[in-house]
Each structure stands twice: as C-alpha cells, then as structure tokens.
Length: 145
Image (cartoon, rainbow, N blue to C red; front, side, top):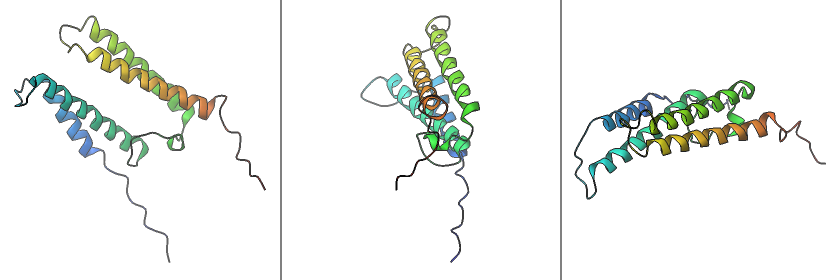
C-alpha cells in the first residue's frame, strides 16, 4: 500500500471574497428587516466579514484549515513573532485614531473592537515568544525509560 495522497492546501479565495463583501456592506446603508435597528445587523454582518478575512489569512499563511495558530504551525518564529507584535501594535494605534481623529467617520464601538483585536494579537505574540523563543522554550524532548 502506498502513502495517502497529500491534499492541496485549502484556498483562501472563498473566505476572502465573503470577508470583503461582508465588510463592504458596512459602508453602505441597507435597511435590513429585523426586530432591532438595522445598524446592529450591519455590524454583526461586518464582524462575520472580519472572521472570514481571518480565515483567509489563516489558510494563506498556514496552508491548512483551522482557527487557532498552534505553536507547531509556526515555521520561522524568530521572524514572525515580531511581525505579529507589530500587527498588534498597529491595531492598537488604529483603535486610538478611530476614537480620536477619525471618530466622526467611524462607528462608536470601532475603537473598542480594534483595541480588542490588537490586545489579543499582542497576547498571541507574547505567548509564542515565551513558548518558542523565550524562557519556556523546550531544549529537547527527553524520553523517560
């Protein structure tokens, strides 16, 4: 018996398309029929768009289906940990600007959502540094006999 055929990595195109479409609808007023204000429905659909964009990024970077970037998926942590930390800091800066200079054009909760994303991204970066590069790094696997 031969080895099982390796499946090609999942395409990020479908979640990317849905993400762009769902986020784009937040910039246009659509009176959604619902028991609450249509802006709530628009916001929820926009959050689903953010999820789809994350899925597209995950599939493109890790070439697998999933949600959580476990430490065994990181190929070059010395390079990617600072990049992830930079993205987290960029989200925190965006949250500050959306609450200050861009507040007249941004929805009121945008700053909180961007701050949450930025802090979670910094948390992932800090955890990855601790486990893959920092003091919690395993030097080698020890076998007990």
